[in-house]
Image (cartoon, rainbow, N blue to C red; front, side, top):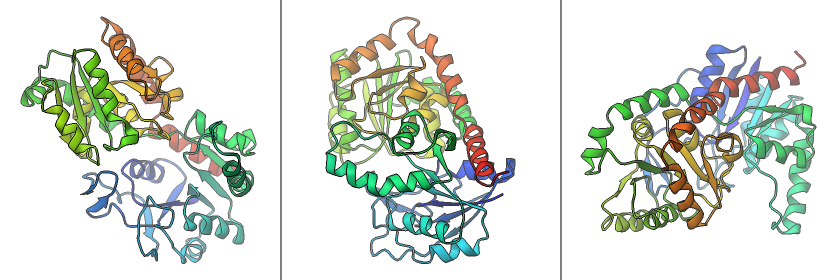
Length: 386
């Protein structure tokens, strides 16, 4: 089964999945990249700096870069990917089915049009969640007018989690056409890196001038306002710094974070940390906190749990119902610093972390790349009537 996959750019989370499909299943992926972002050092507006990931992104699977005619190429803006040759390339690739990630750019819709023209069944995958009750009615009506038919006509929909499944149902997908394909990371790599981090905990924390004997809390994400890293600092202030706090990441809030570090002996800002190193810091941490006010999923939570950290996430983080709520950690009200401080205090109670660490590892294992691949294979078989 030859499966075409349309994505914006090479992504560190997705490359291991494509390699696994190619090596371990009877689905052979051929990936159409809409931009070259990430192949070489590229400016990331979220981090506000150029980055280049230090893990292989293009090895072990078939792919091609589709020429991008956007005047401002970007994987994160609606008109950052305009690829007029995509339909002809889809046809020439000789694929049996087409998996498209999202519907936000003109080229996504070109992919769906190509699938219809060449009678190729398409599989929809995305991060969408049900529309909040506060969403303006006109906005919902317009979205349903465009996205509703796309969902209903899809041969299959891949759900990254509970919230995403509920979105497909709300937009008219038949339950039997929704296949679980959770967002996942290279769990084995992060588990090994986490173990190394625990072995080197004294060295790594001591090198920062922090006490390795104290619990350690980690935030790792882009330092953007909607990620709310400053809420975490405020919550730690409420509990008088009973633990070490590490913040990994870069972005517009970096100066504010660095300023706060200056008079907090228990807090350190490490800046951007690349993929090969970040797993060790997850292993050093006892708790991983993601306080975002909006977050479609939160793959850093998968990484942290795989490495052995226990998560605390806001109720706006999409992975909460699937990864955290089953007893693997704590969920608090987004934007409520007191609620976050209470969750941290609960986590620091004697025995509280131990009881959740094993659950976190088990849940992380249940959301591995193999399970994601199983969902993609099942969906591909279903749409091809195999």
